[in-house]
Image 1 (cartoon, rainbow, N blue to C red):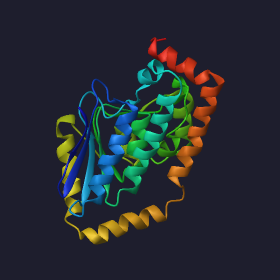
Image 2 (image 1 turned 90 degrees about the vertical axis):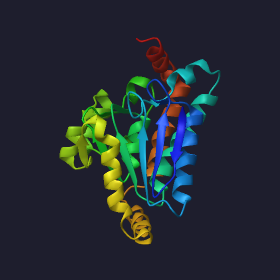
Image 3 (image 1 turned 180 degrees about the vertical axis):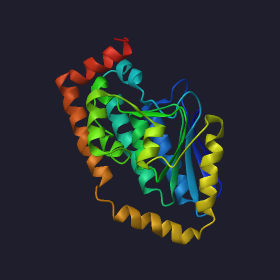
Image 4 (image 1 turned 120 degrees about the vertical axis):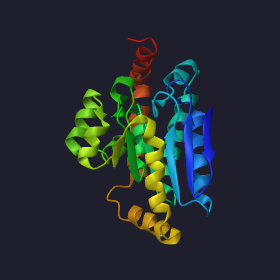
Length: 245
């Protein structure tokens, strides 16, 4: 349970927070550390980011926030998410997200910052943040879907399927769930066969020409989460979720 790192030319970083991979604050920091460790290893050529359990990631652990006095859990989760998303983006080798089941909130932050996405045929992607009293990861969703669909998904909290993203070209392959990890490793092996120095420079150059600074953009979004929390709207929305309303 937690974050597992399996080293190798194709390294694997695996989320495992039963039952739904709602990641606690400490888990986001552990994920950032694992990704950084994998990328800093000169033997690593590609990282596969995957998950155990029912879905890839259900986002932050809202129940942890609601049972913790004060704002410590909220602040830790927000900083942890920013670190984890940045660790995917800044990883000096390509990161392939292998997504199954639900990919929500923070999961979209991870997949949206990945270099490639391979998805199971049961995968869905969504931002339920408006229903949870928070804002964030629209920065990353905008890397997966067209602009107006991104806005629709934020306002309505509707999810989209892996097949829809495949049509946009932002999911490389959609495969049966049982073959997901193998499909991700197959693509990873294709990249790992290239000259590793050239691939690392390619990753650096591609990040350098991105039109949006994803780290600054995401922190801007997070500012509105803090504002909503100070207003009380964030806490009310989180409590409705915890109570199943």
